[in-house]
Image (cartoon, rainbow, N blue to C red; front, top):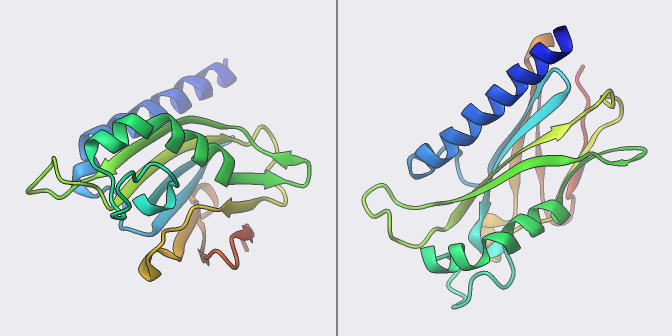
Length: 178
């Protein structure tokens, strides 16, 4: 009975988180070039704000922004890039990433303007693999201000937090909560 309750709670949390992205992507859900990893039970909920220029081929006119047309046309390419370039791993390999959502971040005063950032959300399933975790991101922009990503990992149940930076030169970090 407890495991069913956890599944329902995790599903409800993911649904609320997902609904929040759609409703608040225009409200800058995440500061540009930042991200969070929130550990809850047997899942890690991820939110990242990545530069539009990180998604090769999606920016058709090479202006480092994604128009709504470009975003819509290449949405599946963006999701594929996230699956390939954003990983949480153990010594046994990559953990599954579920429920990937991508959303363009447009200016408040002009929701039809091109997006410089893309919000990415998803949930990694730990399934008992909480030891020796490494987080990797291989999606960086072409501009100098989009070549670093600040990540905050939270394990609220144990009041633990780890803050670190990823760059193209150092694109993976072992997670350690001490």
